[in-house]
Length: 253
Length: 258
Image (cartoon, each protein chain N blue to C red):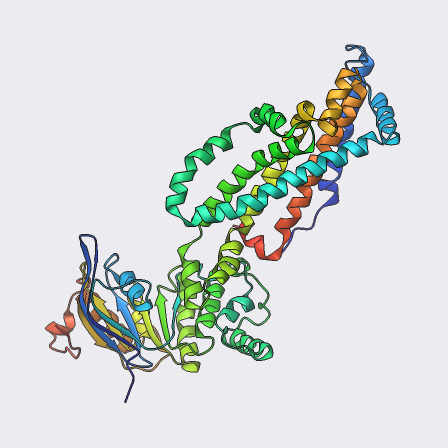
């Protein structure tokens, strides 16, 4: 029996007279990596805020089993704390001081920032800061990781490296992950399942599974093919696969 | 990360040269005879006045008196202003209600309170402290309030994620998040308080550096006047240099390096 850490049942969200989400139903299984993509302003962040519990749906229900942690675009670290102190926030349940120190060291090593324990965030590059955020979120026994465009504030090459880094970290410390992003490459390279949202009010428009094991290369055929499917679904690329009669993806609607 | 090494030939020599130049110019004007000695004392006369004031102990006494008043007024203003600013920063309704009146008092020169200060507290420590308090408390409230209101929401969300609640939210998130701005305000405010104490003592004092200035004027001792002006200016610089040390604290550096 697999537990369902996250389950949305006909979730709608209105802001005054604006309908942002319409009857979104979604079940995420334990250890699954789900990416949510969609046009900007479509309600991705609203969905994430409700998953994290910062916001409540207007109608519908959300079930959440386990401790949720969020990773932000940038500046999610406390600038007044060092790398080690920021990571220690994720280990507040660990009361034993030496046990905590040992776990901090392990995490610092895991993100390859040995020697930077006592640096402050403003002394690190954007990519290093995001690695510290990931380490903080993965510290201890959290269950669900919510990623809000975590790599959108860093340059392209750093972004590619951070994706590999995230895949490696999740291999070491498996979590249930929801990644919200406008970066379709990112979704295709990382996720087990990609959810494509429609324009506002957002509904699930399309869903596709990618079974290739992580870490995947950006040019892995399944990744390339998934990117093409998503772009086609968003009306940006032409559907040559369908015309060739070779459609091995299944649309949900 | 990397600190630029202070370069002695660039940071010490030029300011020293400018200061020496100023004194030479001062000497030249006084030697030219353009002004009467009593209206434009020579550097030498000021030096003699300085040693006279040191010997009779008056300068040190006045200095201690003024510093005591500034410290009291400043500490009171900080102790009251920061909590008030924290409260106003968190409560939009309170902010809307109080902001106009705080802005009014902030823009009202504390010196205008002088007659009331004397009526209420008499001549001496209490009225000077009251005026310094008034000059400092409103800027501290306003700056703290603005800093709290501008703390990025993401910090509180992170705090919630990691189980930081209640009082810990104040001590582990709000206070460290506003500290750099509060320190900057304390520097500005301390300078203001030092200006105000001299003015207050000129009118409502029987001692202190401001009173000494008034006393020198009444005694036509322009040499002592210059001694006091130099001391007042130097102490102002020293106070600022001391408060700058607060910005060297590692956990507030982020606020100054963007």
